[in-house]
Length: 159
Picture (tube, rainbow, N blue to C red):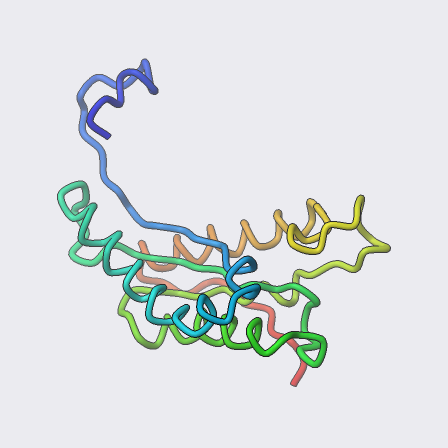
């Protein structure tokens, strides 16, 4: 951020604002009991740390933060490991434990291997539709936080 001209030649010292943070991760943390056990604590600390570290670069009193859950195997959580369930729940709970945070549930966007280009479970079988849907949900959720509105219909898994 200290040298924006190098990366953005059109930047002319007109200032900028860190309007928010977006994050989608967590699968690798499902592979370790230690990571899963401390995931919620670490996620909340990460949100706090990012907000503190970038406080000088924003006009917001509390930088918006939008996260997407892991969504591997979709809505059928009977297929999920206990660690994956633990991490998913921690991601969902973050919005209740920090102000100005929205969590997007990525489970409804999961696609089966038969509908995807390659078998790559950790990366959602590299199915572009998954990335497009989750990215769109993240973007609209950020717009909702920044504008103080709620326009996004967030698909949920069947009960």
